[in-house]
Amino acid sequence: MDALFRKLILALTAACLILAASAGWVMAQNFSAGSFNFEPRFSAFGATNPRVNSIFTYGGAFNYYVFDNVAVEAEGMGVYMDQNKRFETPLGIGSKASPASGIGANFNTRWHFVATSQATMFLGAGFGGLWADTKIPYNGFENNLTENGEVGATYALTQQLSLKGSVKYWHIGQFSNQGINAFGGTLGLNVSF
Image (tube, rainbow, N blue to C red):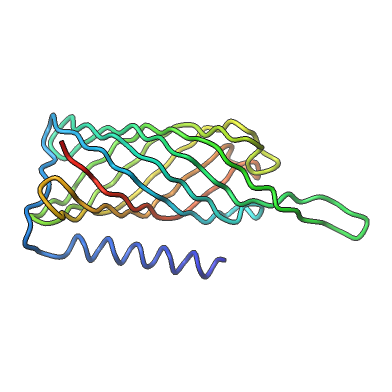
């Protein structure tokens, strides 16, 4: 799993850099103050907690640009977490699959620090919450505070449509073995209004 996760991160990073470095034939989106966009998105994460194998999220976000190239974002998502419940047995330690599902919400900021006629690169960070149907990880809590950070790029497909990719860090819960540090990537499609 570790090797697969590292390959995924490398591929997403390379895709973001290629998109940002390419010059093109379409005008980039205008991220001017007062504009907004909607972005359906999907994310996949690996985790440093040995009890969690992978995390998948799906949902969307609304961005409002308070300054040129600086946005505030409200994100809502469904979450699926593949995790293992570990327990002691007479023969040692046992493990049983204990997947979790839930919903999450984040409030983020995003700054497009590089903007060309075709693409942008951005930094983002935020916080929110995650509410699950079971404890995550299994020795943690059902309701958790989350923090996140990301670096990524957008690539204009048309004047109102752009592809977004990012490499993301997502912390869930406490900063102990009852929390999760997740690293992964997000793909989205920005629709500007």
